[in-house]
Structure formats: C-alpha cells, structure tokens
Amino acid sequence: MLLGATVVVLDDLSTGSEHNISHWLCNPKFMLIHGDTMLIDPDAVVAKHRPTHVFHLASPASPPHYQRDPVRTLMCNVQGTLNMLTLARSCSARFLLASTSEVYGDPEQHPQLESYNGSVNTFGPRACYDEGKRCAETLVYEHVRLYGMFTSTLRIFNTFGPRMQPDDGRVVSNFIVQAIRGEPLRVYGVGVQTRSFQFVHDLVDAMLIALVFREEPVDGPVNIGCPEERTIDDFASIVKGTLGRPDLGVVHEQAAIDDPQRRRPDITKARQLLGWQPKWSLDDGLAETVDYFLLRNASVKPKE
Ligand code: UDP
Image (cartoon, rainbow, N blue to C red; front, side, top):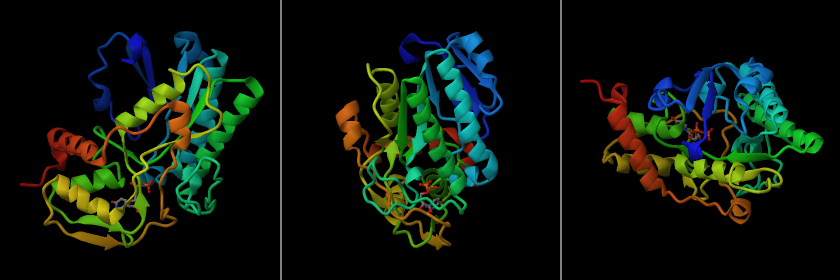
C-alpha cells in the first residue's frame, strides 16, 4: 500500500476484474467504489474522501475494447477526465493523467519525442481513443494554465504484466493464451510493425515518482516506456520461446486499420527529469506474466 495511505479505487470494472484486487478488499485502508468517472459527482467524492493524489487511468485501452463502444470511449476520456480534474482541483490534490503513445498516431517521427505532435487519423477506428486522450491532455494543460494545478501527464507505451485479462485482446495476452493452448500465434498484417514493451512494475514506479515523490511538477507530457523495439513477428518467437513451444506456427491475418507501423519512445525526458528508466527486461517480465497465466487462468489451459 502506498506509504500507509488510504486508497480509494473508482472503477466500473468494464474491462477489469474485481478478482484482481480481491487481496485488498478486506484491508481497512482500501475501498472500491463501483462507479463511472463520467457519472460520478466530484463534490460527493471530495466531501467523503478528500484525496490528496488522483491517479486517473479510467479508460478502456485495448483496441477491441475501446472500439466496442467508441463514443463512450471518447466521452470517458473527455467527460471522465474533466470530472476527475474538477474533483482534484476542488481539494487541491495532485493529478496524474495516464495518457498514451497513441497520441502520436501512426508516427512519422521515430523514435517518438514528446515534442512530436503526432499523426492521428481523426476518421478511423482508433480515433475514439487517440482523440479522446489528446483531448484529455488538453484538459490537463488548461487546468494547469488556468488554475495552477500540480499535474503529471505520462504518455504510456505498450505495457504488460500479471493480472491482464485473458480476453484483453492486446498482443501480449493474446500470444500467451494462444501458446498455452497450443494454437498458432495470430499476427495481424505481415508482422514487421514494431512495438516496445514495458513491464507493469516499471510503469508503477514512474507514476509514483512523477506524482508523489517530486517537489515540483514536470512541465508537459513525459514518455514512459521501454526503448527496446521488436517486430511483432520477433515478439511471437520470443513468446513461443518463453513457453518452450518453438514448434508452434504463426499465421498472418488481415492487418488492423490504421495500425501504427513503428513505435518506440525516446525517454530522455523521463531519464533527466524523473531519474527514471525501465529496470525490467522483456524476458523477465514475460516469464512473470506467463507464470501468472499458467497459475491463475484455468480458462486459458488447453482443452482436455
Ligand atoms: N497484434 C497481433 N495479434 C494480436 C493482437 C495484436 O498481431 O492478437 C498486433 C497489432 O496489430 C499491433 C501490435 O500487435 O501491430 C500491438 O497491438 P496491441 O493491440 O497489443 O496494442 P496497440 O496496437 O494498441 O499498440
């Protein structure tokens, strides 16, 4: 638990699971509010809990999840972010926005620096998430400018780890589930597109440094991710190796629309201003994640 603090979680559990926090539920310093950031009354939350730090991560983040109800995804990032900012402002709490590498769209600059304004298609299936997060960043910017709030905007690159849902739909959990089931790994497109994968513990460290352990806020957004880049075909081989299943095949399916072709963060700003860089290797992070899926997710096991 965070330095003895009381933690109040607000979650509609639309893409998560109460099981993931079941080990905290009987702790008197932990509380789950089953609710929606778009509908919550900020004044009521402030009156009851008076938070000192608000970590705003509420949004679906996996393409199949955020595309299921696109308008809701967009509004969750606009209205939901505005509500959480209002809440934080009214009790002078610090505020962290979980933004995303998706604000860079399908980038023309590589690796991506925070100064790059991005290349997002406003008229495509990823726009509901990308534009929602871009608008959320703007809301943060205006709250800093107008009200002098202490905020932190982290542009989070692909992140994975234990407690991902087997049906999350993103590549790490999909490949692990397929390999455990002894199925071929399904790559969208020809497999030369790249991503840079960071382990969840590194992300949590960055969030705490950025919002809790700093005297002064960092100016502007900060990339948080691992600068080691892999093609999706290479990543499929790595997952097969971790599970000891090099024999499994790979099938190439239709490419996803507007799929970013290259993604790698430049983390110079995070290194210099937060003193942060990833500590976990892809191999160690994947080993932990695979263990989790093998131990916890009976539904993932191969059918007898
Ligand atoms: N991908 C894939 N197979 C899957 C899921 C994703 O080949 O089962 C590809 C996807 O097209 C993309 C990359 O893996 O190029 C990362 O996709 P993910 O959904 O994990 O994250 P995002 O696209 O948001 O970075």
